Image (cartoon, rainbow, N blue to C red; front, side, top):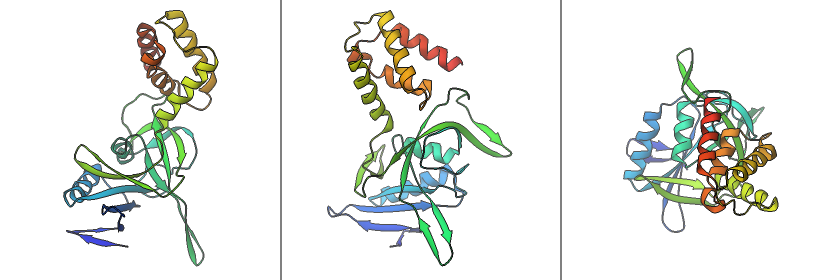
Length: 238
């Protein structure tokens, strides 16, 4: 149900069994990052957790977003901000009007990664700023909600797992099957393990994302730091 909170009207408001108050903001129209921050801060001051869900083809997104993996997608500053606020995910839903009814999809999450072919900077189309990102889709398996606090802001999110965390686990499992469990900081072994990782997953994920995930295994697999640093520089330069 809608609820008036100070000078705002929340799209959806409910209380959880443990007494936590939750607001879901379903955003369709264009909005600035500043307003997202202000509204989120207002809810937090009122001890209310907020979840932002974007209309996947609304004017709040730079280009329509679909529940699939995509390369070189244009995302708005608002989308990029929410990706950081929600720790590596942006929630979307599709709203499709039909005769006599409106069909609303289940929410889905997109994880953004840097691309291999576009610089990590802001671009402009007319007066509208955007960034290039690859997207990785994560379906929402259930309706359970997790309430957390990040830098003083009260955030509500689903229990979907962070894509990068899942990818790190997949790479570790893959390399273990290839016989790589302790590389003893060896340069050649580190390079070979990284090459295997890229070859296995690069049809679906960007190289820079895979290297970031691979590097997260530095301590677990005893990777060579000089090789990691060299490869980061190479792909960022490209």
